[in-house]
Image (cartoon, rainbow, N blue to C red; front, side):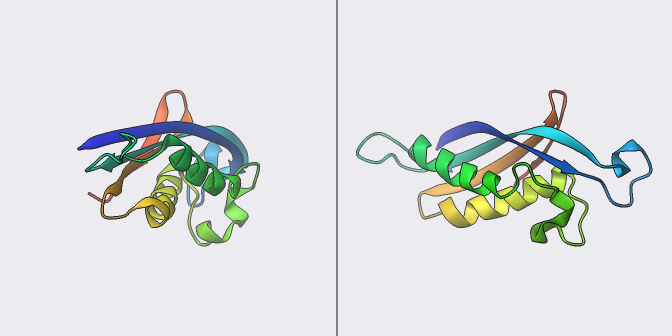
Length: 123
């Protein structure tokens, strides 16, 4: 099995719902997003999946979040837009775009700071 990982980022504001503390107030993060996929086989160029494709699909998705107030976005309606929910949303959407008989999205990790992250995988 081959594993490929990219790291990208986006900036956005949010506030946590049903949270007792400072994060219940409007605030923002410069989130880093790590996407890891696996490939069973390599193509004729020796690639599991082209990094350009992985980056493009991820960045197109992040464009819908970048410089937005996450609480107002339809994908977080009724949810607290926590790092956990963001990771799950990104995992689900990237999986729809990339998963096939050879490529599987393994994990999406969302870093809200240099020392705090949340990951989501189907396992």
